[in-house]
Image (cartoon, rainbow, N blue to C red):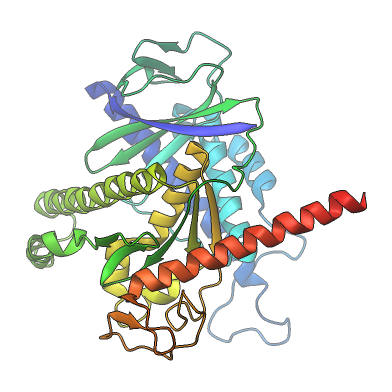
Length: 395
């Protein structure tokens, strides 16, 4: 099963904007209530029976079940008779809010994510329609959604043949509203096979990307170019009264500036990924946890470059264009000569030239590291192919 997500800019009417904002408000209330219910139940089970706090304690009956998704979904249905406002929003939309909360609690264990947080009116930014009906909900550049009716959007690209629209998500951003369509096609796409010209890439702070072919690309400073304006707006924000219209307007201006930086970075990442795929059949990169980089001395510059996002985009573009993508071990890529495999010693950050004392090979430091990455990738691919040949021969 192949699944894709297409994003379009929505053009809602003023009445549809009111419905979207009302839906986001009710979704935020359901999220916060359900999260508070779970936190109270967990807090009531923290201490032992004979060691309760003398100042205060959460008292919940011992026979009370843990409020998981099924318990809270059932309680939500019963609450509609007491709170008529819940009936004004599509039932499946509210159920998806509870399901998202359930996923957030599960991700704490399986993905080591943080504890879910309460949401204010700025943090609840999207809701999803899991079902759109069987047919006749798409017409030109319009889509028919529950309660919203026919919603117009900018049809920047056509939906591919053979794909079926399964669900739609409405997203509110600083630049407006967007509709994200989830498309599915009953087909299995095999992974790209290693073949063609191999290219290794090395990511760094001085140069964003250096390839094994000798290409060096400077790191564009997305945040630094607008940092002065952003700093001025945030300095003005702290003097605004909380809840005032002026503070709300300034918050929106800051959000638009942040989205401009994010969109520029993402667009540049996609263009660079396609450029690398134009001349390569295989691309290899270091397997690095960039969260460690983000906590170091150059954390601000690391987050500005967005290395993790770039590798995710590069991996997707390689899969889409049939280019093989592989990760290699990151250790000692800058301390080994790509020509003779001799250990050249640790280099300082100011040393930008690789010069091997054994064979005399001289090149840019990042290019030498990219060539080491390429060599390791080719070695890993050859070992996999030899093991597959041995397995076939044994069979």
